[in-house]
Amino acid sequence: MQRFDCSQFVEQYLHWLRESIRAVQVGEVCEITTPFLDRHNDHLQIYIKRMDEGFVLTDDSYTIQDLLLSGCDLTTERRRRLLDTILNGFGVQRIEDELTVQADETDLAQKKHNLIQAMLAVNDLFLTAQPTVAALFREDVERFLRANEVRFTPSVGFTGRSGFHHTFDFVIPASVEMPERVVKAINMPTRDNAVAFMFAWQDTKEARPERSSAVAMVNDTERPVSADFVSAFSQYEIEVIKWGEREEKAGLLTK
Image (cartoon, rainbow, N blue to C red; front, side, top):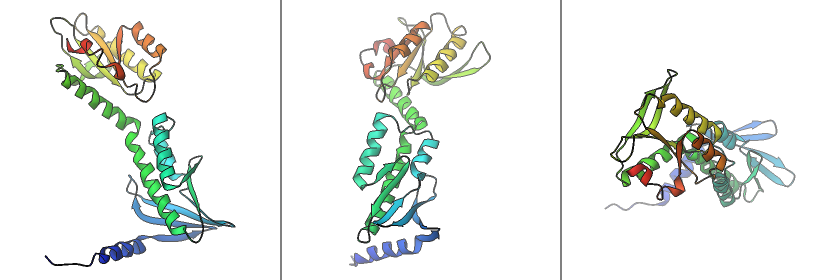
């Protein structure tokens, strides 16, 4: 096998960086366009401003604002912890929605690299955004049903009394012991999600076989399920199974 000089890969990488980076003076700020892409395939940009004590580098709030606009709630305990861990790891501060770091002449390059890496890592928190996490939770519920050998049909739609079409995540057909059960995987135990499911079930209940029932599988891993949330469902005879208690209540689905 032919030997090769490993240093060529370093030089090629540095050459790519030099050729790909663009710098533009915007007033007192230097705008740096990097070759690194975010999830929109847009080039990450950072801004450098000279101060009396050195330099301030910032993403001008782009990274976090983009997550918030995409539906990624950063106020939950889990995401706050993830965000703090990422920023601490790169030595980057969050000031309101701005990611920023201070540097001097000796460590400017390293701090610039740290900020870019932090932006890329924080950008990945989009994977925990609500639509994505909701889909993952539905998959968790489906795996649980399969692991317990529950017979079910996924993503079943019914037309309600109002004429609206409602889709339920799973329908478990009737057995000798139990009636038909419709199951909704609720990732976030919020009032809006509760109302939406209660309306969907009440609207379709009369069109379903006698004694059909509804079950809400609720994700309680990030935020607790309040007593009011459970009580509201009980008023409509909807059984609530918290994800943390799924094993104890599996019998409601497996029979």
